[in-house]
Image (tube, rainbow, N blue to C red; front, side, top):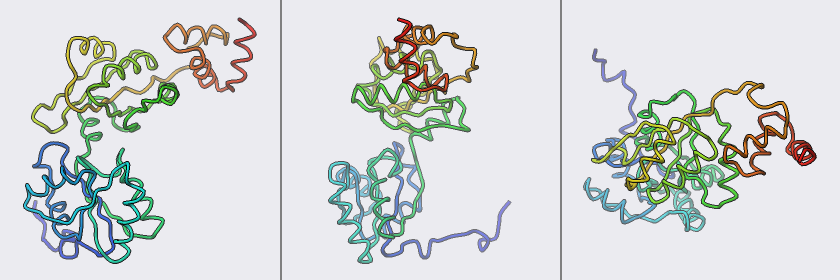
Length: 291
């Protein structure tokens, strides 16, 4: 069925407004995913802020677009954020792009959006590709409720604490991972989560796109003999609902059971406290007393 053109909302005539920051999603792999609106905005803004001006410069040139560019990434975001917002306050318009996908998702773009909010600078989104959402839809796992974690910390204590917390998360989890860290991450996920279903999605929308739907233990075995390649999005089954009688009556036995599953002693006590809805000090007091 076709509709009269007048019934279709459009902002094409007045797309660009001075003093506005545009968050422009770019393809995560397939250039055909570049939207018509994204191209229009990139063609009409006064300047482009990019995570890597070299990569974004190549992308823009593929579409015949030439714009003044300024770099904006993790290590210069504080200084450049002030420069960009000053230009926006003077009436210029800016498009923010990341190397691939949607700006501000696991990306320093979130900081400049916050800065703009503090300075009452208008921000609008030009939606498009996002690797996390692409992977979630392909995973075969529940999509109604999910939690996006981005990249796990490489700091030992922070990583341990986060995985201990996530072990109880019932929503589907989404994690980004680089190929050279994949094996370690799979081992850690199995250590803290136990057996779970997982979808390993790599090279989203690219020529070598692959979705592997399996279990954590089988994924670990597979990558013992297969070298990880490409950027990965890991989609992991959430924790199963637990009944109160799923753990031993004794706190000591409960903690020992968690330790036997592979947890460190302190992590096991934290997990025990959370499962029982009691304080960590109470678990520690009872566990140490019974040793």
